[in-house]
Image (tube, rainbow, N blue to C red; front, side):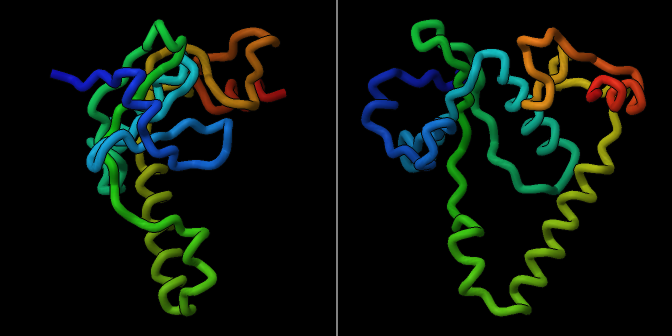
Length: 153
């Protein structure tokens, strides 16, 4: 059964990002929860897709759903232990930095190798990005990259 997060778990949890715009909480040793706008649950599908088609290390999505009482999308993921790169970058020597840059280049190449049929979000709805502002109407899906680029202007 997929995990459902209770409001009390969020209240008692550790907020991982100090930015008020990003709501990510560690609810226990193994679980992280991201709250988002309900229409942003396609992020969970994107993570699942990248996990299934590349070797890029992304958190395993345990569940994604809309919590009507919070009016929020809830993405439940496995917690991945690690350090925030911006916090340790200045302390690294050049050799370590070069290795990380090469690793990031590999991740980008892996993402670029994924080809889709349309330019759209993962759940076959309109494009969701700060570039496409909802108050201006809906955008996409686009059949070609040229159509997408036209939509930007």
